[in-house]
Length: 176
Image (cartoon, one colour):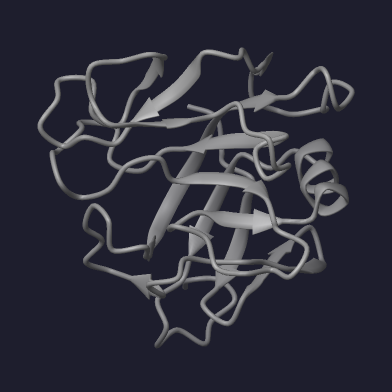
C-alpha cells in the first residue's frame, strides 16, 4: 500500500502542505463529523485524492501523483441518494439528479475527486466532494475544498494524495 501524502485542512479555511499554507474555501455548512447529503458541509476525515479532471480547452495538463484525464462536456456526478449511480461519475444527460462537471465558470477547471462515501457508497451521507478551484471571493462551497488555480497546481505537483480535514475542535496540525 502506498503512503498518503496528506495536506491538513483546518475549519478556519486553510490548507497546509509541504510547509506551505494556502487559503481555502470550505463548505457553507461548516466542517462536520456527521455529513449528510445537501447540508453543504465539508466532511471531517482523511479523504484520498482518487483522480483529477481538468479542462484541456482552458488549461495545460496538471502534474499529479494520481491519474489525470481531460474533462468531457458530458461529464457529471450523480447526487441523487435514491439512484444506483449515487456518488459516481456519470455521463449526462442522466435519469437521476446530477451535477455537471463541465461548467461555464472556472471552479471545475481542475477538479480532484476526493474519496468520501465511496468505499462503500451509502445513500444520504454525501456525494461529489471535490478539491477544485475557488471563486475569486473565496465564497463557500457546497462541501468541497477549493483553492486558487496556482495553489491547486502547486499542491498537485508536489505529490498531494489526500486531505486530512480536521474537526473544528482540533488545534493539532497532525494527529499523534
